[in-house]
Amino acid sequence: MAFRLSTKRFGAALSASRASAFSRNYASAATATSNLPQETLDAIEKESSLPNSDPPPDSQTSRLVGSHLPYMVPTYVRPPPMFEKGEGCYLWDIENRRYLDFTAGIAVNALGHCDPGMANLIAQQSRTLIHTSNLYHNPWTGALSQLLIQKTKEAGGMHEASKTFICNSGSEANEAALKFARKVGKTVRPDGSKYEILSFHNSFHGRTMGSLSATPNPKYQKPFAPMLPGFKYGTYNDIDSITTLVTENTCGVIIEPIQGEGGVNVATQDFLLALRRRCTEVGAVLIYDEIQCGLSRTGQLWAHAALPKEAHPDILTTAKALGNGFPIGATIVTEEVASKIVTGDHGTTFGGNPLGSRLAHYIVSRLSDPELQKGVLQKEQLFRKHFAALQKRFPEIVTEIRGKGLILGLQLSQDPTPVVTAARERGLLVITCGTNTLRFVPPLIINEAEIEQGMEILGEAMQAVFKEPGHIEGTQGQQEMRDS
Ligand SMILES: Cc1ncc(COP(=O)(O)O)c(C=O)c1O
Image (cartoon, rainbow, N blue to C red; front, side, top):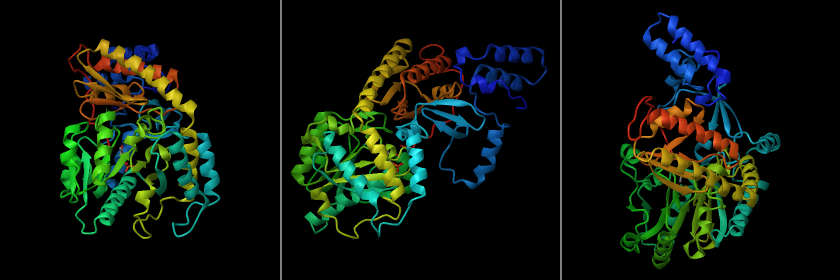
């Protein structure tokens, strides 16, 4: 399309219902008098009525994307805008349009985009020391390890937390956890028969071969089959199946206390208590993957900190918010597990480098602030109030509200992809998960005005898509890519 409205820039800050009257009149005038092709007129009309309509194929953005694509392995399908700047809960694309971010880089930017404290530390530490390898000591790997243990215990989580292994991502944190479980099994039973690992349907633990083997989603596993031997899958929250699935041959059980990618499903306390009991009975290591739901996203430092200690894990994995965007992960273990790991069993070149560790040390200190955690619970209530209103407004579309703190899911009866597109074109970023679920994992520092603004846009997007309850119409989005 050769026509791109210059009103776009100031229109971006407005929601659709408040879109510039000037812009609309301008477009109406253009469409009324023009003999341009209908397709072009429709595009003009769309651009004028939406604050952030996706960049069209002949835009500067699309040209730039098109020039890059030939060089990128096509592992992702991305929506048209290209983001180049972030601050707090907002992102700006290269056409300087602003988006409110309810995704936080998939539950990563808990402190928002480009936190100034973090930016200062990056600058400072990058001029001091970035990397030495794990062959040498540095002040920050150990300090972060110590802080994670201290804060975990203070928060009432994993009461036997004792030692930490620092790595670079969630998959690697889980990979370490799975290897440690195997090593425990080998140590306890040197004949090698204690090697089975149980995980659960709808879980997501990562893309490396070990973490992928624990992620029983055919879409992710099938292209890379066969998976590693010894992996079994159970049904989340099904207490009755535990005894059959977890046996003397089981060395580890890995579970997300709240499944993120799987649909924001919350494990019941009884289920986790029963799992813990059975793991203890057969000498299997219980691993909680809190890569998405941890670090105060539920209003407590760890999601499992809400549980009695009889449900606590032997291994806890974290990543995502740990670096607020800087890649880092950690595997926290009990003394019992650590005692089975010896020099050379596991390692990493970059993991625990001074830059990442110092940043994570700062971020953990900030995220463990009780005031921030209290705020998360208050903001949850605001989201829930708006979700309830949406459910009332679209009773056949919104079927369930799930989650805890600021990891929330809105279950729809239909594909939410058009809503994601319609919201983006109105200046709000949201993502999906599970089956037809809208996922809300905003920065934990989001304020009430931003939540109100985002929910208003979401309401407008849903109105635009579901003109009348039960009926999809209009904007067809691209199939959302979601990776965690
Ligand atoms: C619960 C959970 N575990 C593991 C992972 C994998 O983490 P990463 O993508 O950093 O490897 C993710 C997200 O991607 C996740 O949400």
